[in-house]
Image 1 (cartoon, rainbow, N blue to C red):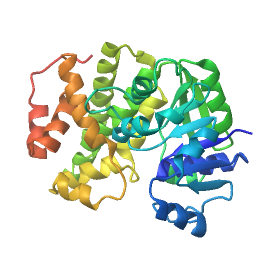
Image 2 (cartoon, rainbow, N blue to C red):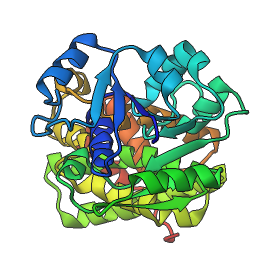
Image 3 (cartoon, rainbow, N blue to C red):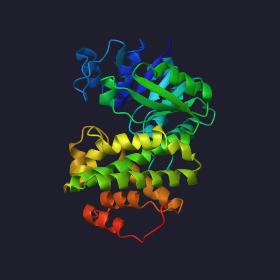
Image 4 (cartoon, one colour):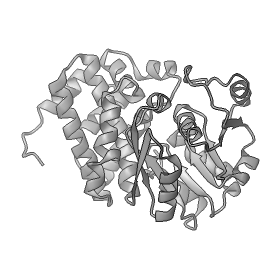
Length: 331
């Protein structure tokens, strides 16, 4: 029997633990707040998802050291900008035989590294069993056991197939992939496009606008990814266009919700104060802007989102400027 530990007890980590329970596979969730740990172990109600009744196969813990030492599969499900800090504090409890699964989606602001790159940077190049699990998925729908497809990406084929096997069931289907960079970039940058999608909703634009945004958005993601060494096919798959669609169109999407509130005139500061969960796209917009400059590539939609978020550009003016750029050939 596998010893599976989730680092982070938020909605997505809890949803994946729920999915494992349907495979009769127990797991442990570490949370940094001991009062939340005690509350969830006692009430069996999740603090972020009221309708989730925590299965008996899932246990919450506060002691990270002993939990990490016991685990042979560690699933990192904390916000992307916190991954390095956690690993710096607890990296000594990791061993090279563990499979490390990353479900956090983001690009580190300071280093511009993806999450698997952060793990290797902190723990060392000797850690080979690193998997990124990504794709179009909302925690709320996994918990309701709606059919969901994900991608298990790793340079280590055995590790990728192992994660593919333990998570797959009659409502989760997982494909394997070896383009880790492409999967991670798709999962991170789509959050920025989702904010743009929400802004359009908030302003009151319609289907024409949304279709144009998603089409040109996946083009921006692909163009940057190819320059960085990812495969074009990845962005046409589940972790590319698939993840973009679910995040940019869904009522569940926190990133789209942030954009919608901005489109309606709310400030980013006020929005973030009122949010219980993390919208990764806000921080990713800063990273993507710096990657765009580093690789000297035009990413007009991502750049517009960056300017709206961090330079207080009026959303309608941002759209106006996008529509009035120099005319080009589609590619």
